[in-house]
Length: 301
Image (cartoon, rainbow, N blue to C red; front, top):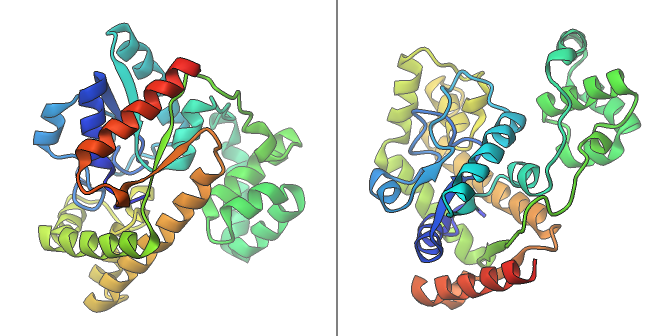
């Protein structure tokens, strides 16, 4: 999950295994959003080749289908260089889109239906559409919840065009690649303490100023990119909807909830072998443990 220490561990694993890192973070794709997404810095990116960082401007709607298309090509070229592609990050849908080779319904044919559903949402509210989603696709409704307007509309438009639940169209071919999957675990108290420290550090490094800079470039709070953790709350502060103390607390609270959701998502994947990072005093033995796990998984794949 977030704040567990993935960045440094991924770097050392990549160095040990001769790999290149593919970021699996839905918000690291956006340029100019560096502090709040905790992107690897310039020195870290010199150590190991990184991909899928800074590939789109913040006003571009970069989708999981876009990510999948680009990463599948990347994996091919990395393997042609006889390097190991290493997905590192905590965006569950992006991870599964790659390892399970999700098939995504084309966006272009959905526009007329989408416009009508967005009008209904504006008139009657997202809960009205969510109630309908519960009727036609309860599995996906349970996954997205009542507040994710974008995904609710996405699922309903696919249902209207195909007559099938969106969850059934996200067909998965298991084991699209020979896969070695390791999850990093840290007990809740220590993880939450790290989250507190990380948020404080991001703010001291200039997260508010970063968002102010994005606003000065013409970007606005309604963009999909600006719904990212940290950015959404800073926008609320800059627009006077919450005070500074409320902003800080909101980022910490929402980050803790996000970490919990990440555990829930990845725990469903039985291919992942979990390692408790809290039992290791330094990263050396931890990296060797991860290397041994991945080496064994790849040999048996």
